[in-house]
Image: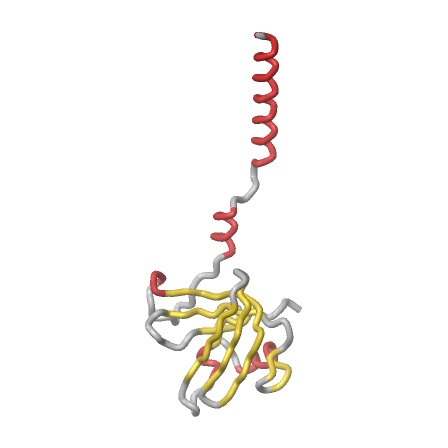
Length: 144
């Protein structure tokens, strides 16, 4: 009986050692999320506790004077709809970023095949404050 107990302890110690080796340097889900989380744009006026971001693939996009409609399929498997409203004489790009940086006039070519027609497979982060202000869209086109 003592020999069997000693053998079981030896197996348990070996199993714990193997588990320890296998889990070493493996990122946890929490550290992976934290390493991948984008910092909110400085232009947002709300605090982080009043801010939500939606990251994913754009399913629908309509650009009209004074309004842009976006439907996004998030990486969390939800579908969200956003309408960005602004004065008709204002440039829609005021509500956009390109990979976290200021959106420039030449960036339209990076997201649209022609005016109002989004390139296929386009991704974005939509930043939304809970105060009702216009969301900010951070475009994330595929690397070329």
